[in-house]
Image (cartoon, rainbow, N blue to C red; front, side):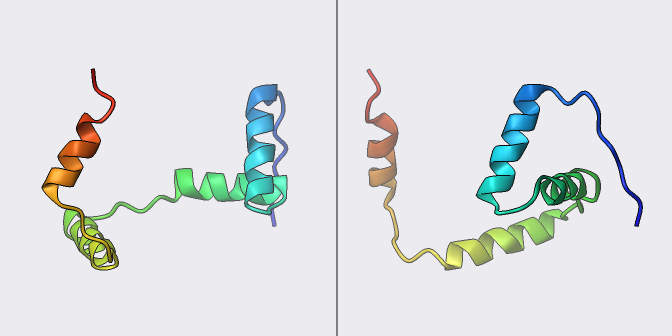
Length: 79
């Protein structure tokens, strides 16, 4: 399997990568591979598939929120 050495990584980027790897319980190497896969092998989703995914997600919501409750939440904290 090929290998890759990355040089001159900015400290702040390295620290974020290290923290994210820790959160995901991955090694730095594994986290870099996941990031590269997401960035470079990202599949385009058709509008129909995106709508189907949204409908599937909506069907899992058990607590319904009224439009009045949404308006109240939006306006809370506004001057």
